[in-house]
Length: 349
Image (cartoon, rainbow, N blue to C red; front, side, top):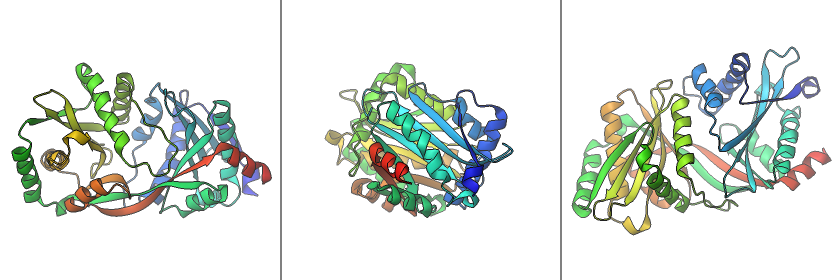
């Protein structure tokens, strides 16, 4: 059987060689082609950036499945644990196996050391994402007895279909109804002088629906915000964060963020968008989204599509996105499963 001939070995993400990165890149490129069949492949430099810019507050551990002569990878398992005050009970898992190596138990073999490492670190819950373009992942989660904690979609907007008059109208209405607010932009790295208030602003993302996920609020520190932005830039990304500020109090009221990578110039990814509840119902969310899209149209003319992740239960954000022209691209599910349950499944096999 294939799985018994394959060797599973740990690979230190902090000491990975160029040759090993190249092998990981081949596997990730094939996996990406399954998830996003219409997209061009990601450049090798972008994959290298995944390992060269690991934020210090993240504990990343990697296991790989080499073929017999150690020249190619058939699968990998990535364990991600945040060194934060909150959510010390959970660990995220990424598991990829090439199509020709599936149905031979390779996924289970990769999962064994990941589960043990998470348990030894004091974690009790695994979080795993699957998508509709790789149905085998869903089947694997169901075999583990995992529960679907949050269901959502990657939604996509074709830039050519944008209603530019609507973008302008949204901003004009908000300027009239919320005249005491100003819009600003941070391009690239966050300014050091604003890191504390940026970290406080991003706590608004905790208000987004989390479904049934056993996940606590994230309370990002200024240093963690710096590290996350450095990670995006180190991986070749050019992030923009647009914010709106209450001029009377000086408080940041909301934000929206995007990330564009010249290695895949036709696509820009929409990140978080949030407005604090006390500032809602004044059109600030629409104002931010519209202003950001106008900037993309003006300064990123090579962009053809905007993509964003939305929980299906996030009715407020879905309403705005649907009005803009976002449509479902593929579905995704965030699963959770107790480590004790995974151990029982693996030991029974």
